[in-house]
Length: 488
Image (cartoon, rainbow, N blue to C red; front, side):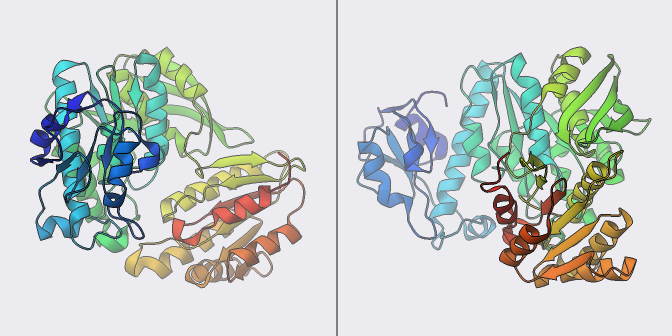
């Protein structure tokens, strides 16, 4: 963060000083976990399900923090933030926030982030890039950060830190040297992305796709598209909207922005597109990157054809920010997986390959993962493929049909074995049975432990095991168990 006194912070967030004259200067990091604070940092006191950050305020300052951002008076130098309305309190999903203090601190954190971003945009060459979509946000954010980093200091969130807390926290990692701030924007309802855009106004906005994730909360894909499009509506006239030409709901967002529009995809109408896409035996894509500035070959190290679209979005961003086609192709070809449990491919000493894609799941991302599994097992040297799948959450009334469809899709892709974990995901097993008259090829097990026992008994050297479900299913335990003590 840029150095700011507590008095300046109080002014930026509309708060009041407590136990200080405001002269201490924050020169370290802004943290809500007191254990992560650096010398001269700012401790953000948030309530939790089991503990309240306000109770750690004094210790945080004793350990070197310059002050505290708090909703009530504490025994430490602090900026006491103003309360927020009940309507705003209700829009913030913060476990343990029973009295609105968490919402108040988050609102102040957002105001502080906006103050810092505005200062950096005015005084330095800061470019804010926002990424949203129903799936692929984190992988694309990671790719964008990797292709931009050689061009200058780049800040991006770890993993999927993309909500009301992660968004301002990440923005506050920026300092006067930061040239690129890459942010991932998530939403649970209409207006959420617009709110995040007010925290750190983007100059470049990337919309990847409109799928079924959070369909139970939004009601329809059209409502999801309406919300995702809030990103391009927030762009300035001199900004750039990078839109997926292969998704009609995304391509239509071109009419909702005053910014320059760059279409990406495999469609001939895309400005930045992939031609001659081929997959190797590990489902890693090679393609010709075609742009208005020329063409170059790309060989991705990431597994899955769905990464082609992510790479094209990253390419479009880098090209707009001054990279050459050759530089973009080289950086994409050298890009690595950064965030955990997202197409994380590990091969054991005995040749069993585990594909851990268990971070989250929706129908589109599960289909992409199954296509990847099929590509890895149906090559010149066929291998037996296992799809270990659990519940896909937040699908609303489409829950049964969506899970049934995934089971049928596994059959159509000729996946060798399907292991469905948990009763909530049972329609996957039923769909597979009805689609292919499967017997032993598909099995429904009650829980993670049962899945682990079955796989340990039946997986043999050379098999490929895909593990995927929504976070609530905890299926990463399956992947961890298969790799534990097995050698790699």
